[in-house]
Image (cartoon, rainbow, N blue to C red):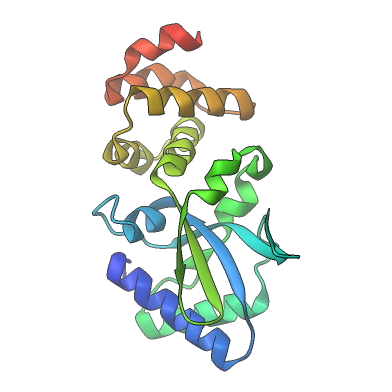
Amino acid sequence: MDLDAERVTTALKLVGRLLTQRRQGPFHLVVCGGSALVARGLISRSTIDVDLLANVNHVEGEYRISPLPCPMPAELSKAARDVAGEMVLKENWLNADASWVFPGLGDLPEWFWLDVERRAYGMDLTVDYVSRRGQIFLKTYAVLNREQERDVEDLLALAPDRAETLEAVRWVLANMEMLEHRERLPHVLGILGHEDIIAEIG
């Protein structure tokens, strides 16, 4: 079954409860993609999974960002699979694919990791949801790197203005050297109503 905002919350609360019962936490994770958009009320569609972008490590009072280990920690994977069985979700509804394939976690601006919505799901699971501005960056990268219509739909739902679009496009072009579909840029800008940006970025 799909995940709407309520079911995302329920599923993560169950994961958090299992981690506490099994004394296997804590985990502090950064979530992006459709589930973050749904959880923050930025889009109305449902999603099929929760995309983990990064792990937040607490070191000497500071937050340090790192990719999720591959494979995911066994305790987290087991809790997620158990919740999948209870809620009739696909087995890998909680996955770190985004963390493993995104090429530039370290290249994201510092504000990206600070401008988040933090929610606790019990004592042993904390989730930072990427902000609207951060999602514009990620979705701009996505539409230029893969052909999935939902990326364009999500970017339209985020409705970036001209300045936001220009900021995101400049960052993607400057930091993401390997873009599978850079040629889509004029088309995407046209859909967003900001086709004149092409003249500024060349």
